[in-house]
Structure formats: C-alpha cells, structure tokens
Length: 412
Image 1 (cartoon, rainbow, N blue to C red):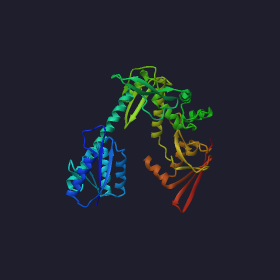
Image 2: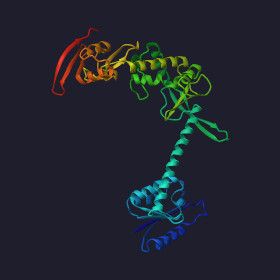
Image 3: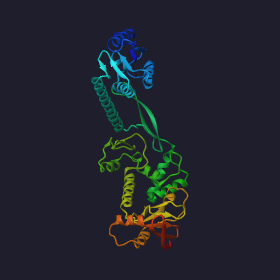
Image 4: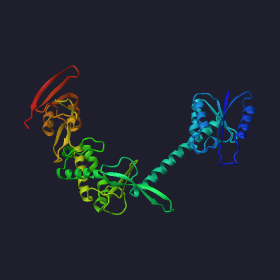
C-alpha cells in the first residue's frame, strides 16, 4: 500500500511541530500500526497558512488522490490539512469517492474504520451548516446595504451608471460603496414614460422609440417587453409620498425619507425591499403610480379575457401562431401573429378576436364551459387566418384527412 504523508507549517507560528517532527511521528504510526513495509510519499508545505487550499504540495496530493496513486493519506493533526471546515470536508469527500482512507494520528481520525467514517459525515454536516450560515449572513448584509440605497451590483438600468464612493465608517475606517448616477442615456427612459403616458400602449410606445432610433442596453430594437421593464422599474420613480404610498399599499416596506431622488429596489429570494437612492428619477410618484396601475389593470384584463382560440389559429402568411392581445380599451382583443409581435417580418393583418370566436363557437355543440370550448377548438379544428378569410377545417381523422368547413371573409 502507498501512504501519502501530508505536513504543513506556517512560518508565523514557531510553536507548532516542525515538518521533520510531523513526518517522523506519521512514519512511526504507519510502520507500527498498519504496515511495516509501507511505501511512503511525503507532501510538505512549509510557510503556508491553513486558511485555504492553495498550497503546492496539497494540490499535488489532491491530484494524486484523483489519479489513485495513494491508498492512505496520513497527517499529524486535522488543521494541517485545512482550518476551514468546508475545505476539509471537500477533501475528505474526494478521498471517499476515490477509495482513499484518511488517518489523523493526533485526533485518531481514521476513515478506514466505522467511527472514522461517521466523523467524516459529521464534518460534511458542519460544512453544510457553515455554507448555509455564510449564505444567510451575506443575504442579511446585502439587505442592510440595500436599505441604505446602495447599488449592489449587476447590470445598471438604462440611463444610469454605478459610481464608487469613498466614506468613513463608525469605527473610522475607510470604506467604499456604489451608488447610481444618471448618464446621457437617461433621455431614453424619459421618452418611454412620455410616450406611454400619452398613447397608453406598449406596442405603439415601442414603435415610436424605434422610429426615434432609440435602442435598449443590448443595442436591440425596443419590444413591448422592454418597454414594460422600464415602466415597471422603481428606479425611475421619485421617492415622494405618492411613490411611497404605491409600494406600501402592496405591503412592500420602503426605507428612507421622502426626497427628490429615485428609488432602489432589491429582490432576493422574493424578499422585496424599496429604498431611497441618491440618483435623479424620471417621473414623480403620481405619474409612475398611474402608469403602473394602468399596466396592472391591462395585464389583469388580458388574463381574464375569454379568448377561445389563442394559440390555435395559424398565420396564413408565415405559419406562426396567433395569440390574443387586449386592445387599449381594455375590453376588445385581437389575434395577432407572434412573428408580427416579435418584429420578425410578418405583415399579416390582425384578426378581430370577438368576431372570430363567435364564428368558431358555431362549429361546437352547446357547451357552457369556456375551458371545454377552448379544448374542442384546439383538438378538432384547424384554423388559418390569411389576412382576408378565416379558413376553418375539421380534423375528421387526425393526420390522415380533413374536411374544409368554410371560409369566413372579414370586411375590415
């Protein structure tokens, strides 16, 4: 059997056993208790701390474990391997996967025996506890920083950059924090709010922004989704009483006093907090609240609308699916080709949703259940809209033959 003896000594600690003493004690233990003819390899790191695993001979030992070049790893004390519970546990788990046993002669830790294996699993439990504790501590710390209106990293919203600021903490130490500051692209979100406030439609807002040659942070044309992301971002809302009321009405805690600055939002594991930042906002709280209430109402209307054939109608020009989109009056809706909505070149006309659904219901037996009507349309009918006529075909025998029922021409 091949035994790898690992020993480590930090030059800052003259009280610990020397490398030579550690090697000698480990040799004696191997020869006297395990195998008098054992082959021994020495892995010694001198002048390295145990706070991490970036040590040349330890890294070589780990590679030899992976390559199955040692059968046992022996050390004098556990902290010679690592002072970190998580690092130590990771190395033990690697040994276990590689079929390598671990022996510590001082603490009598031997994974070749049942008690040693039990201690290994205990080390894994403590490692998991340490990771979770660190994660919670980091999360709590970030929440506290966010409450002070700091920017915690990531991609900044369009119109803002993060700026490093130096300050002195309560203990007189120099610290750094990041805060948002506006840049020359702030004209873009201003235009988004101005246009939407006047037209009340994300599609038209996106069209006008693209006509003005405005682009997103990634350099792409504006879509409805990109417009909504800007309109719904609290960073553009002034931290006044109206803005605060909007969030508090939704049971979201707001930190900081009312000011002329904008809000900072932070969302970690669904823990949403809003804090007052140091940056210049785009609109006041009244306008921002009105726009977001309008968007929320529109989204609820779309969700509640009884649309029988959304996704079941095919575009006769490009083959894409046509989905229901609520109109600006929040009552009527149209079926629109997905490739037209996504700006992928389709020019097909929109299909009046209510007229189409009334026609489709004529080919279904009397049924009061809206969900059942949707299922019947999807399962039994092939529907194509070519911009002039709604072509309805019955699936008499799926994948074999069909029967065209009619063409309904729409005068628009």
